[in-house]
Image (cartoon, rainbow, N blue to C red; front, side, top):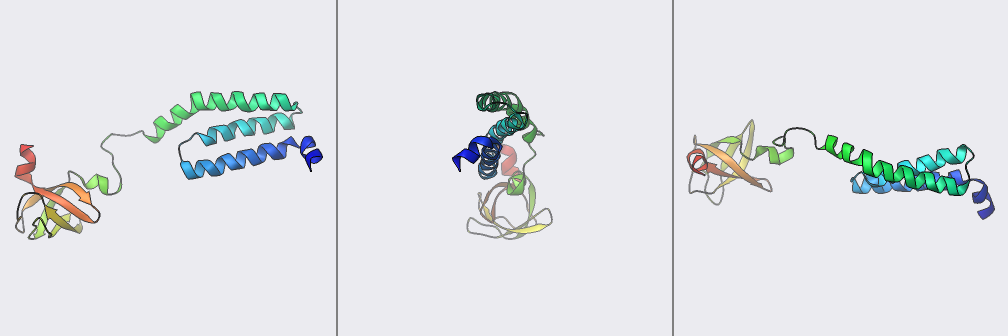
Length: 153
């Protein structure tokens, strides 16, 4: 087995690359995929006939270069876009809503966009037809405040 591995370092580099790819899929921080790029460089060096020491150098140099040069650019592109471009329920914070059923500190219903949400009030009972603003989301409940109170903050 070890004799075969000594003649076929490409198998080790391919295994290392796949292991880094799996770890990257679990962590999603764009670090291990850069190490995987170094493993691919070592794999190419092996196919080109390089000695083991040169394959290791290729792995180290390419990994370091990718971490130092490629990762920061990739992270910037992932975070690209307006700061107020939020996803999921975070995008609802600050949105206007319309009270559908009386909303108190214990519950009620509001319409946010086209969806009806359970809601709680931060400032007493809000009557149906009142315009409110979503201040936060707690689970599946929108916490709202009257628009007048929100404008005073």
